[in-house]
Image (cartoon, rainbow, N blue to C red; front, top):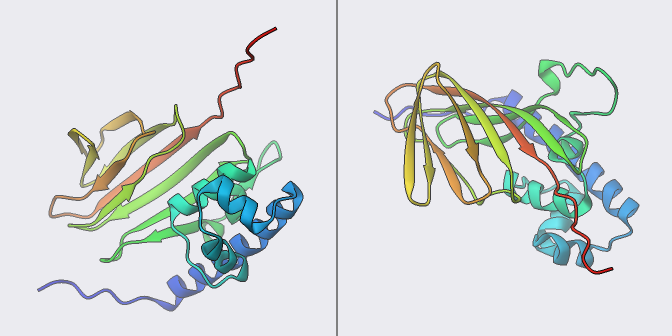
Length: 207
C-alpha cells in the first residue's frame, strides 16, 4: 500500500513564509533594477502572469522559475529567499532555511544558505522518497554541483547517461544541461548539494 502523505501545518506555514519573502524581494530587486514586469518577463523568460502572482504572494514558483528571475535581476536565489550572506559570518538557523520543493511522497529540497548574486554558491539539503524524481531544466553555462549522498542511492540522470551514487560517495557534475535527481531504490534518499553558478566575464572584442 502506498504511503499517504499528510501536509503538516509546519509545511504550509513554511510555504507561506517563503512566498511572502520572495514576493517582497522580487518587487524590491525589480524596482532597484528599473525594470517593468514586461521587461523582466522578456529578460527572464518567465511569463508576466507568473511574475504578477509571485509579487502578489499567491504563487508557489518552481526552483527553475526563481533561478531564471534571479539571473535576470543579477541576484541569487538565496537573495530571493533571504538566506544570503553579505557579512563575514552569518548563521542561518534551521527554522530560517527555505524549502523550495515538496515532492509528491514527502520529499523536499531546502536551500540552507547561499551567497549574494550575481555569482552564486548555494548549499542545499535534499530528501527523496522511493519513486520521487526532480527534473531540472539546467543552469547557466559552467555551473557545477558537488553532491554527497548520506543515505540511500541517488540516480543522477543526464540526456544520454545515468550515474548511480551510493551512500557515502560524492560526485562533481556540470549541470548546465537538463538533468534529474531520482530515487529508484527502496529506501529514503538524503544528500547535500553545493551549487556554484558563477557569471563569466564578458569578453571584449574589437579595439
